[in-house]
Image 1: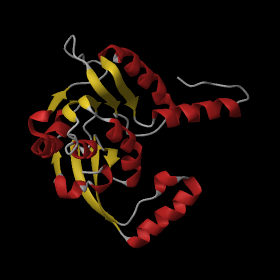
Image 2: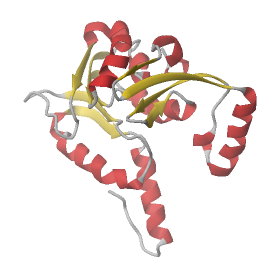
Image 3: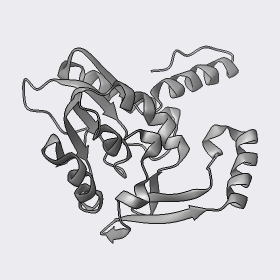
Image 4: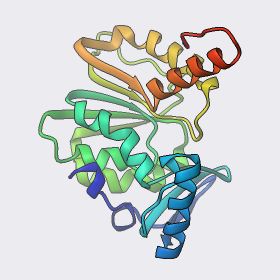
Length: 213
């Protein structure tokens, strides 16, 4: 299934479990037109087509929704994913549903910090991936893979918002998991390159220059 064809409201039911909740919502044509206007002013992230969507909230904070922005910013990873895959952050399972139909993906390990998210979303993605999927309740900043384990594709997606402050954590994760990446493998974080470009731009505006982290 292509990531742009995944319909989370049809795959993950609404529900609340502890600090986590999955809610469905609909964007009307009028509301979509308003997002298009905002997109002209603030960028493509604001654009939301009319239709049905889902959102995941944790501790009262919006963690993600299955809008175009989420699909676009994760499409590169989905395209590259192969072999033994490691993902930090379960979210709504958007990228997992997209990986389910990729025969070159042999197994996916997901590290999710919140058990309530695992309980809400886990059954739906397990139903699609079966024994190709392992979900581990842990903080990716503390978790360690079994010694000798190598991953062909590694993707970190644990951030609810986009800020250059996240670059330090991304860099630390990339360094720590470098030994777990298989030869010729790929590792990345959600919107990492975009944040590095933003960091460089901030440096230029301050009259200096920053390569980012």
